[in-house]
Length: 177
Image (cartoon, rainbow, N blue to C red; front, top):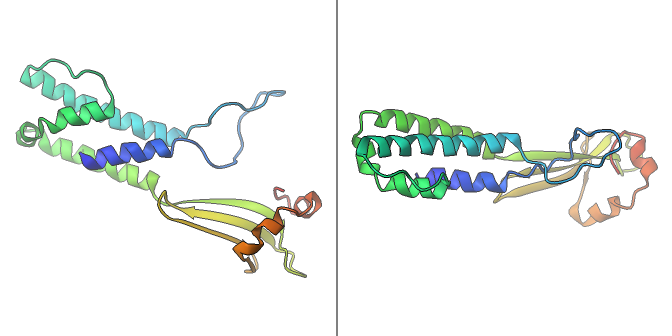
């Protein structure tokens, strides 16, 4: 159950969409508010639904009062208090299979991510390859690099110099300024 708690906590940190991808807009309006990752919302809903279902089984079969609320920490505490009973229940293998599937799904969503931003043409003399910044990693470990498609890299100490490039430099390749 501790893994479920960690997955649920980690998914909260990943709810906000970080990519600068396209946002559906109505003409003449500005995008407002926070964009949420639908996959993370679905995962969090699946966690809550699974825990509510099993808590409902415990309440029903043991003749207990309903669990107060549907917050994941509350449900986890309740189920932890009945873990021995659940382990001996005929459906214990189903619970194990459902938890395993949920955790595998969560790990694939919460695993390493990668974001790339186009920076226009390479800044090395004579190179016309596209330059891009890449950020990848997990919540605990991040890797970043600025490189062009031809293999030139820009060391971190020079990254701020790229911010001063003119819009014309990036417009030639369709990249963002």
